[in-house]
Amino acid sequence: PHLVLARDAMLRPACTRLVSRHLPTLASGARSMSNGHPNPNITTSKDQMWYKMHNTWPVQVPLTTQMPGTPRVDEGVEAADPKTEITTLSNGVRVISETSSSIGASMALYFATGSRVETEATQGSSHFLQHLAFRASEEKSHFLTTREIEKIGGHTVAGASRDCIAYAGECLASNADRLLALMAESAMSPRLEDLDIANARELVMADVANQSKNGPGTVLDAMHAVAFSGRGLGAPLLCPAPTAQAMTGDTIAAYLQETMSPSRVIVSAVGVEHAKLVDMATSAFGSMKPAQLEPPAPAKYSGGDFYMPGPLDMGEVHICIGMEGLGCSDKDLLALATIQTMLGGGDSFSAGGPGKGLKSRIFVNVLYNQGVLSSSAVNVSYAETGLFGISATTTPDHTTVTVELMIKELKRLRTGVSQEELSRAVNMTRASLFLNLENNGIVCEDLGRQLMYYDKRHTGKELSDQLMKITADDLKRVSEKLLASTPVVAAYGDISCMPTYSQIVSALQG
Image 1 (spheres, helix red, strand yellow):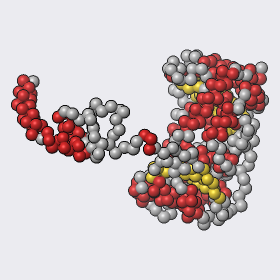
Image 2 (image 1 turned 60 degrees about the horizontal axis):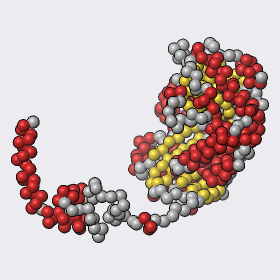
Image 3 (image 1 turned 180 degrees about the horizontal axis):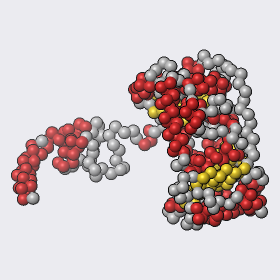
Image 4 (image 1 turned 120 degrees about the vertical axis):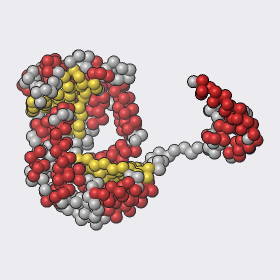
């Protein structure tokens, strides 16, 4: 320590002489770097040296002082409302876009296929296509595809669901044409050689293995299977392990041949000029020939139960009690979304924190029980139908109590809601809507899915206005409609204490 102090004492006079010698230069430099914006705060040699070294004003500049080179507040331009445009190409491909002030672009391709249009011969193909995306194509190797995406600073992702396969990406708007070409190439002509299928198989098998550790996901998949009799929307979302082992490129090629048609293709984008997007879509899909395909068979809800034992050391049970929900085109869909918000839910560990939804019914009436680890409302909608209910994760010794609490909350929907509870649920739903629409990626998905379900776009303001018109009578009427359907019950894990299906149905109807 003494050596350090001595060294500092020796250096201090030299620093002082250096600052004094260059004060005129520092002062002139500070004036020149202000670019015509004098800074009254540069008054000391310390401030001048800071400005010279960092090319910024000193820390003590007040926030009311305008920074050099920045526009005045009154020079700003009011942001225009986003503009949505829709075009249908001559072969049936639909293109939708929305303007954005961002320099980035979000784009997506939606194919209205998914696992619901798989046959017994092509089962699991959509899951494999998810893992073949943005890898090798008929024109490029995996390495070249990756390099092309990296060159334009792009970010890509793909996913398969029950009713569609999506390819999405983000990049600078100036590179949008290059990214869309790569997305279309990956979707329309993936390479299906033995090596490519083997690589995808590893990822598919990893998904299947991880699913056994994902209790809520396993229960939701089981609910679909029993509710829709294992066909269409009830077909497995993930490729079964035995099917994955036998998967070939010819099977996936057959799936693409049987399901791909221009009328099922949607190109959506945010931050890309619409005319330019139409040209890009025409270049990518204009040569695609229309095909006469049978529409997916309408889903038939049947209800039922699916109890599945889990690993012996699991130590918990995952439960879902539900009924038939509403399709995306149903006029009461927003009322159902409000009911979902009113029920709420979450994890027990967050039940004591501020702003954690302590007023929602599931938090107040279900999660207070110490044995309930998590619980929330479930609401899934497809074109013509859906599923609605309550899910929960609990310990085996609290299974009976948890099921009783879930049934009680579902039956309580018949009793109606207070004006205060209705107002809170509507406002929370509106807030969630507008918060999501701040993200360009979510907006891009919203554009594509709305065009797929409705063949048009409902703006956030339109949906918000409809939410404001929802009444307590609407919620009670929709609740009665839900509870009139045959219940569906799924459980996974330690199901030794799980009540029987008939007991649950009797309790719900009693």
